[in-house]
Image 1 (tube, rainbow, N blue to C red):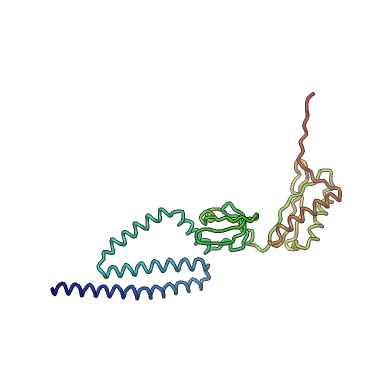
Image 2 (spheres, one colour):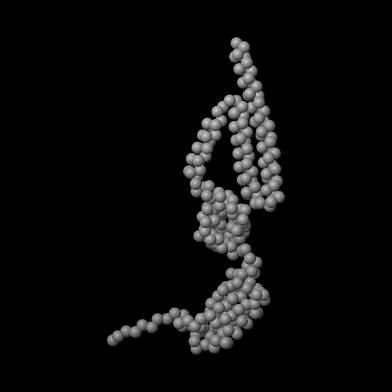
Length: 263
């Protein structure tokens, strides 16, 4: 009888200690997670990564607390840990693609190849970045479609960020006929570039002969503009140069095919 009473007393003591471990452990975990969040905020990491890392740290630390409490109760935690490891491996294999997307998302958030509002070409999609999460990125295309792209697909390929720089160069090619006045055409294009309000003075715009093609003399036209003005200036220049060429009698050749028939 005394032995049974001693065992019950010992079990109650262990149970009380286990409860204390859980209660104190939760307080310590809460403090540690708060400390981790503060350190990450000071490092100026992305809020998405801070929240996610805080949640992961909280779950892992609480798991250790509960394992310690179970060990105090006499539960064979070695088998329990082995079971958790096997379950973790199985889940990892089942969620391989999701884990890949998560890893890519973390890398993107840390290294920031682009940010919200940037116009990019990535993962086979060109558009404006609307949302970045640890698993996927949401982009809005030019025709107002919403495209959700797995982060693994983005990070594994080439990323072109059109908004990363404050200025961009517009690269255009204009061809004139071989019978047209080459110097006159060059002067017309240079004057249009110089007079355009949105074209930057530095770097200076360039107009140069690039090629004597099959049916035309081609010019490279390369002005610099602010990134946000790129498409508007490009369209405006194409229109102005074409209208001025027409007015000045300078032709823009197009491919032709001569067909000869035998009678």
